[in-house]
Image (cartoon, rainbow, N blue to C red):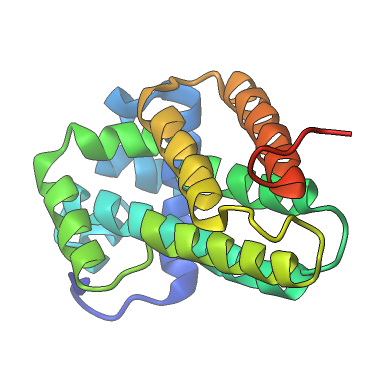
Length: 204
């Protein structure tokens, strides 16, 4: 999935940011090459100078945002013992929830070629939901070793529950981001209480 020509990070991010603004403001139906370059304030042909077409552009946008949130999740290990477990989990969950936005994720689903490109990249090792899930589980393992969550806490299942819920909200939640954030917040509070008290434990 290499773009045609030489693409600098600044150009990519400029176009990606413009696409997200168009989607946020007008929805998936308004996303065209012309709309993106117009929003970015650049020449109409710039997108096609760096990408083979809109499907490749959408795929690269989603993958770029996945990579960004994966880096955020991997930084969790540096937060072991800092703030609260709930705050750390919520920060990563919200980053994932807004990484590409529900509209971008939905757009990829209705563009078969873009979806195929994304799947191929993930199979090839590009960061995705599994990367984030593994990073969260590793962070929770460290917190367990440090005594901030119970010895018998099921960290792998907690990570799966959090990432799986965010994935569900991205695919089905619609544009009401505040409602999705509130639902994730409630889940994180529940997971943190369960992790702190362990299997069969009771909140204090």
